[in-house]
Image (cartoon, rainbow, N blue to C red; front, side):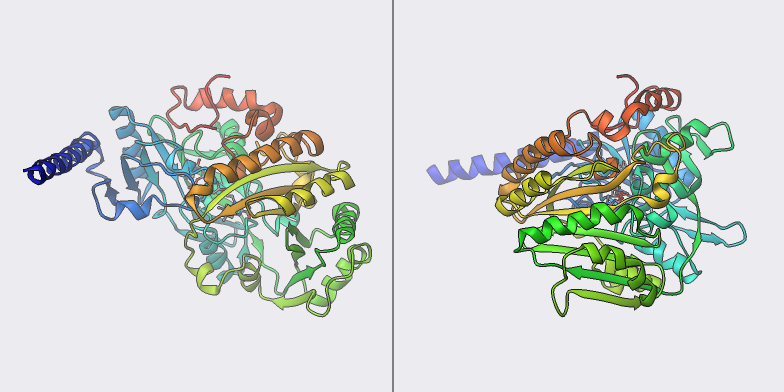
Length: 490
Ligand SMILES: Cc1cc2nc3c(=O)[nH]c(=O)nc-3n(C[C@H](O)[C@H](O)[C@H](O)COP(=O)(O)OP(=O)(O)OC[C@H]3O[C@@H](n4cnc5c(N)ncnc54)[C@H](O)[C@@H]3O)c2cc1C
């Protein structure tokens, strides 16, 4: 009798869950999406769960529906459907937002995924390429390289060009050719009324062009195509790697001494990243030319740096451009040609260290101490800025970080969900203290960080007001929003 009662309760519960799911699915069915040509996937579809995993599995959101647009018309229809149904709509390209803003940073949105808008069409006469916003960087590098060209962008092949270029887009070739956003010539974007706009510096959308190049991810509309300037890829590239003895604290200080002193005056043909972890002290980089010239260009730096570990501590390896993309991203050829997510638990803080204000000895000691004692494994990566990045006038793009010596990315990684709170708190507490004591007040919006205080100023400085004005002009009802988007009012 008791057992029968228990079974009754269980089946009642199951029935309730089923009914709840049914109601949820019915309430989130959008007839206005029926004429979309690309796939439209609802939560009750078995394909749905893996499609919302994305890169950072620390944060999770469930959209009401995933719309995979295949052309501008699909995007227009989805935006109009969002307006009519009163549902929020969020663009997603590569799903690599550190805070999962490709899913809007909240539940129950229409996620408009542009992965199937993925053409790469080179116009070598004009020196430009038309790139669908859904391409991954690996595909872009690969297809452009086959035509003999490159655009400067980040090192991870699975990052989407959409979110990347709209937030800045830094990579090993940026000191030579600028950021990805600096190389945008024009864009196609579906706005908050469902209109398709052609945006460039020479038409009436000049202000929007400014806003999109640095502050464009998720705030103004859905960019479907980019036109970028292209650069001839170098015939020979040198991959460089130097490893130092991390156990000797003086070596850390000496390496920073060289990085701070010689870094700013290094040739623009050099891209460098300094990595510091509990068990690692290294420099990796690239030289746009053969090893003989690379050695010459690095001489002054290495003269001031500590001696690399022998014999494997120094490497100058000649590569083709595309091979260097593989090595710099620690990927295989397969990863570059067929980029995939590598979902994991992580939290990132970022800090700009400006020219003339390099980290001092105390700051480096504080950082080393933190990395040694942190309960969650943390890596500090310093990307050397300067070169062409800093030549771009402050008022040309909404990427304001034009005076940086380097950008520090502090990344904590862990393996189990249960550690989320501890690891996030640890890095947040340290980051706040470190930024107020040792670095500029600015951070990189491309490494978006939900708990960053005063992010409006840290990401956009004194152009934040201007970005709001542009937002009001193009999206006065704030259709395109996420927790750190450009608002319509302060
Ligand atoms: C493993 C890894 C490596 C990285 N390496 C680098 C690096 O080397 N250099 C660097 O600068 N950054 C790097 N990043 C940061 C990366 O550039 C940003 O996270 C970027 O926003 C990711 O773009 P996405 O399209 O992949 O992400 P998504 O999550 O799809 O989008 C990110 C944001 O942009 C918006 N967005 C996406 N597509 C569009 C669109 N078509 N129109 C309008 N808004 C859109 C989204 O709504 C969201 O707010 C890296 C990130 C990861 C996870």
